[in-house]
Amino acid sequence: MVARPAAGRRRAALTAVSTLVLTAVPAVAAAGPPHAARPGPAAVRTAGAEQAPPEVLRALQRDLRLTARQAAARLANEADAGPRAGRLHNALGARFAGAWVTGRTSAGLTVATTDAADVPAIRAEGAQAAVVTTPLSGLLSLKDDLDAAAGRVRTAQTPVWYVDVRANRVVVQATSRSAATAFIAAAGAQDRGVGIRVSPERPRPMKDLVGGDAYYIDGVARCSVGFSVTKAEQQGFATAGHCGRAGSTTTGYDDTDQGVFQASVFPGKDMAWVGVNSAWTGTAAVRAEAGTTVQVTGSVQALVGASVCRSGSTSGWHCGTVEQYDASVSYPDGPVDGLTRTTACGELGDSGGPFVAGTQAQGVTSGGSGDCASGGTTFFQPLNPLMEEFGLTLRTAGETVTPAPQQDTSADTWAAGRVYEVGETVSFSGVDYVCLQNHQAQRTGSPAATPALWQRS
Picture 1 (spheres, rainbow, N blue to C red):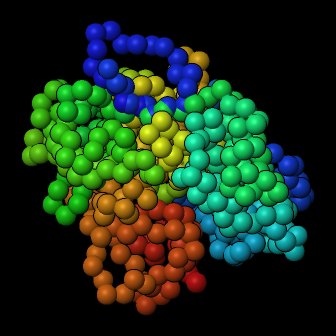
Picture 2: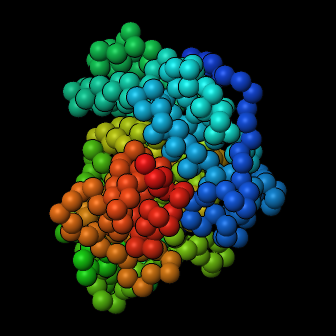
């Protein structure tokens, strides 16, 4: 959501699905009883889980209505579930149909498969098994057909569609059932079990570098800084593509010259980055509450159902949960795919601001509906694809210079700065490893040193 400077901030509820720039389903068969997560001193967890920032814990208590003990347990369980889900994803291969956490403290991990013979292996990882009919690859293929149809037909009345792994189906959100039916037919998917959700919501874009601080575009609009990044020697920050075009100039929260948009993609995707001048220095910080910050330690992707918090220059620091990955949203300027749908609230001017899961960077705010008084839905552009698209590396806590992607003759050799996805295999010190969780590799996070991210193959 982008904001335009004006006398007096408008507080109208966002009843349409919009970018946040401030301007002038069938039942899934569960196999066996749920299993509790298995966190403990010896658990393999994502970096940062052992020292949960108090700002994150307090926001989770407020927004998810948890006690302090529940908030801490939730983050620990989510960090423990990620590697287990990754191991099962790799083991099941084409039969894998998604994974998600459940419960107030995310104590339950469910992994879906299309083959009941996989149930013992899933249970052996302390997870509940869901036997379903369609693998994740089939759901993604069906959504690709809807994405293609969005390029041929008007989607004003069908603003959102996404893969819902918990329901094992693709869902179209529309203002009416007839609009959804027409869109599904245009994609040739009328007999493929697409779910329909009728809702009046229509998202629209939401618009020392500290994630969540305000910046201004060409003097006429306001967005929020996402995450500090580097490209070679150039410092800058990641943000939403709808906030500005390549060449647009920015000023900072203090109204001093800041930088220039180096690249921007919108619609299609909602990603951009701004290169800043020498007066600005990148940090690993994200603005939280009451002047405090959270230090980012990496970009490991959270599971469906996991808690996330976001920061923005209008609404500040708020939390929610991941509802679906790979959502598509039809904004007035055109459809955007590959977004993540969350229950966190957002408002105009929050566009581009950061989403974190614990201390792991997740993405930059794209758009949503509702506000932080009445609640709503907010979408973010995942950060790892953004960094991969533009050749950026994330600034993280404890590093004075973020590692640039190494130029190696072998794509199979692990390298700091590269973005890796679940299932990719690399070589490090003569040993092969398989990736367990999507992330950008950090210099201090070699496969041998990060068992939550890599497993010896």
